[in-house]
Amino acid sequence: MLEIATPKMNSPNYFYTFGYKGSTANNNGLGIAHGEELMYLFKLSSGCNLNFTAADLSISKTMVEMWTSFAVKGKPISSELRNPNIWLPFTTRNPVHLQIGDINNNTDSTVTLNNTFYMDRMNFWRKNAPIQ
Image 1 (cartoon, rainbow, N blue to C red):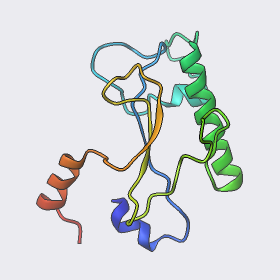
Image 2: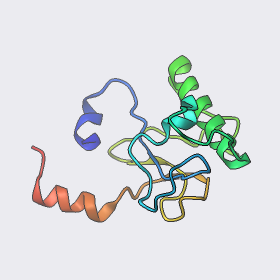
Image 3: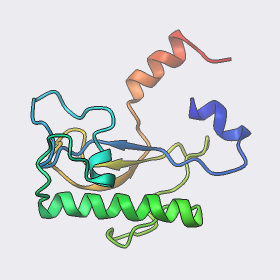
């Protein structure tokens, strides 16, 4: 859990969730699959339609820029966004994560900084399976 690991780390932690279901996704109605964001980073050809829409291209460019910037400079930024420095590190005082796409509307390609990561679920686990 980031709340436990972060205070012990010497480097910042950047946490994100992916909720965008673009034109390349398998539209089976089950939501976003684990690892589905990889096609926007690497344009995987695992049976996907790789004819990206403008929104798909924007998500792809944003993610590639952020991951590359983080690897090179240690800070994920993207010129594709209105605020290129939107992604702040997760801290115990400021438990934020980058929300790529809207988990409530998977076709919305909005990128936002959020501090409410599945609060009900996280509180359930904090209460029922606390980490010492």
